[in-house]
Length: 335
Image (cartoon, rainbow, N blue to C red; front, side, top):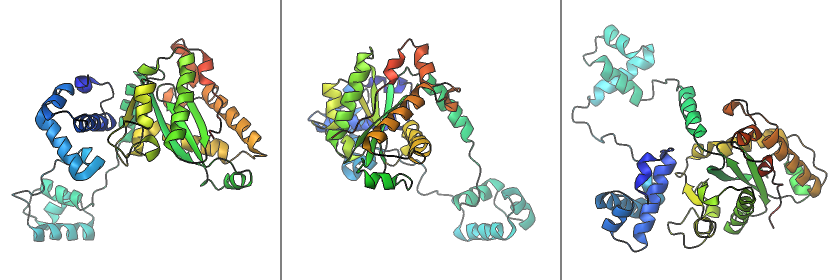
């Protein structure tokens, strides 16, 4: 059932973290190490390793650890390292020039390592390569195959705060964004709770099902917030249980404190804040909902996304033969 994890088209930290989490959950539900290993396509020692790490460190223990050795037998003496660092701070020379100018006995590679470990070498990361590769991976997904869900705070937006107080508007926005098409859906709530997130998913999944999208082909991706039942390893009730057992929909957690794993929905939060909450004047609660609906229509039907080849969500779903009505779901206040 889980043995094909190595062949998953999105083998990233979120996939591996969720795989380990499900494996530990399966073991803790009363199964043996050997049986758990068989179901998840791994050895019993691997199961033992991750169960032990979970018991020692909780959910944090399921993340990858640095593999660098804690001690190096031939490590350069501390006095030599301190001298190299001092010479670097005085001269700002690179590793090879430090060796030549000051006649250092250690190799230029060792000097470079010492400078790097001391944080004295700052190389610009070439993010465009990673983005380009990730963009190609996301193109292989089908519309609504993977949906990111997150919560946005509305009471911390200075331009929106006066309307929030005056008209007693919702404090939070539940946001769902399809990775492949970029389609955006959102709902409003006054309190963060599992009941509200379940209701939002029920509305969204029923809407998608209405237009022929099978919910068993959908994977919902969330962070580890309590409103998504993320603080618990067992899911016999709550948000995850509802998705898996009632809707028959897949679910995956991203690793703790890795918001970049939910980059698509996080970027939509910045866009909707800059293009809607900061600029629109609100007359009352009804006017707020009407304008929120208008922005959603603009985002899904008309706004071109540079990250997706300057195409709108409408352009992308039509390439797959889906009706544009699937993009139209008015935001509501869940109460």
